[in-house]
Length: 600
Image (cartoon, rainbow, N blue to C red):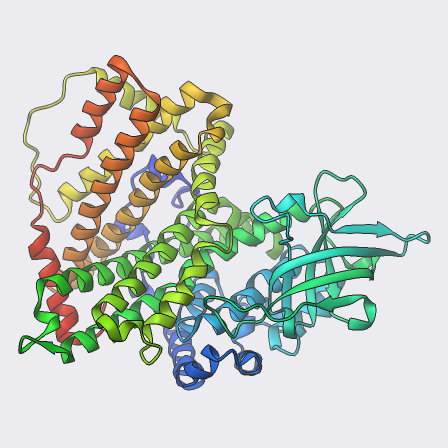
């Protein structure tokens, strides 16, 4: 059945509207075509990437390029590219799925793949003229050419619009001359074409250009950077010295570069979340393998409660990450389809479809990048001293995971963005925060109900709890907006605490909705461990919300207002029936031990 605008929640609306489990997409909903794609990508990863892990760790840049060519031959670089430009023209979920399962062999290949298919190709497919797309996109989709993205400069990192690289129009008006320096450029060592951002005269915003990589045209490269992780991904400085770029290679319009950069990052963020998923599955599988074999005190260490806590948490985070990432991916795909049905071009539909869920993209980027780091960290711990050795795969996984919290906008920037964008959406009337925030404020003044609710149905208490966690966010954000108005963005610690509440709500709700949908389809017995993971995730989320809520309230409220809000926080985060966390962890860990892998 075709989705209608009414069925699809707008970005950020998850906070103020209830979602039915039937309306979320889960990995259990993959089509036959998607399952075949997943198998093909996993087979490529197992054949080409994983056996060569030592070569990637030894900085074999040529191997990264060779694997990228092979990925191009198999069509993996063109999954998201429309068929008329040599791609497979698959939907957003398939694009994400490819990114997910191709990225876990090594962060080196994952970075090259992500930079090329995302920020290296997409700005042209989404902002290019027909001539630009015809000229460049087929070569990028096939892997004949590789793309790079030149935005960051020594003085322009998170403040992307402050770059000093200049573009000067020639006297005859036929070309621009680019001068400047870019740094941390992925794929620089083997790229054929670059998306370069430069400023024309004293323009407020930067402008994007498509620049072919030609040493004879004033382009020079620094040496390969030696990095903590992603060691075989090519990362260099790029210098432009009077580089001539024809006027027809301007991307979109003059001063549109900042917009291109921001929108490219939205897609990059959700794809980065996807790229961290299979790494978690793999790390857990390797860790439980080891824990089942390693004996201490004549017992496999997987039997010890201290190890079970880790296995349960690793499995739960991976499951939650999948649940939320694929939920958002399908929302984006449906929104794109709606816009195309309404007559938008592929470019407009894709851009607006992703932009609609920019809040969710930021949430996912933060949550999943931090989960994969924690997962690798616990993986090292399970291996003990061996985990610290290069002989085992854990230390490389830990080093590779570290960059995910930095690129595509740091996690600090993304936290502040998620709340900032939500407030902006509310101001535009796209998400009504005012009505529910006012209702919560009134509820705080009223007398609480002392009735014991009937929580006999699956997840009835958990869903009620999520509803109350949303009230915590509305209470904190509503009072903060009222108090600080437009100055709210200057209160970064408050924004970050509020973002953590928002993140936990989205991740916990997505996890519960996925499990509820599958329990209805496959039966509660078959989903017993998934039910345990959903309850465990929510319990941990409640603790985080409680802590961050308290921190927020204390930071800006005082006297009676503070007392009332703290009482509200206590009321909103209190279970009627607390789950037995130790039992839940043991149930999850036993299942993972028995299957000897991530098995959900």
